Length: 326
Image (cartoon, rainbow, N blue to C red; front, side, top):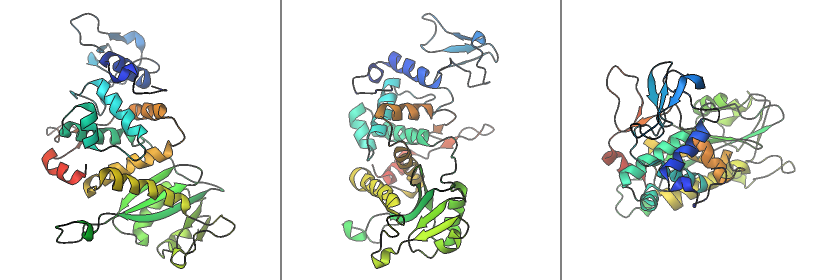
């Protein structure tokens, strides 16, 4: 899938799709998701008509598995070829793809497309977030709100709820976005100190909440947007990178999803961060990164039975789909 295109056999043939997924997830050969065994001498592939395609047996724990076990795709009835096509479409679309669009393109129900989108967004979340910034590096911080206006809703009785979003962008690296309750100093600091190296130079606007936070970093420079100041110090002081990050985010909201519920905002932010952080890769490489990220994550329709490990669960589709916005 390194050069993924819409004529790739993996997007139409389930056997080719399984082989492509195995090559991405198991570059050194299959490993057992139940016990972690990777000794190829103790793993056997099921052969013959009595075994479903892609089934493997582990002699270490006497378990059986496929490439989808222990992933967001486990127990899914959606064909693997449609999974890979959806990953490519979502990864290649700069401003995102709505569930309704996937429904039409993949020929599935809206419920299937909606859960498919959220599973793929979950796969975009990195397993480990390394700190951004560092010595002699600049990290820009800015905040925005996501939410509609009352005047744009014909029968609105009250102003739609606004959701505050904080974005931290390394000028030479990655972006991390957070849904925050407010933009007070205490709230912003809790998010910023988790992901920004204290040796970084912090760049913000004139929001007073940043003043005490800035003293914890190697340096802190501001620009005064309220006074129409956007760049100074010979082009060093600005938060235009973060503004560009927000521009792509707002285009996705206005042009594709139209409305995003608070319950799922974090997953949309993860998708936009992923696309920004992989902006220098090809569409095929981005789709491969999504496929690599499906492991050790589950999204179920309902909570698991009592006594079992709790997995990330989604509430009923009928109630959440009304809030999903697409």
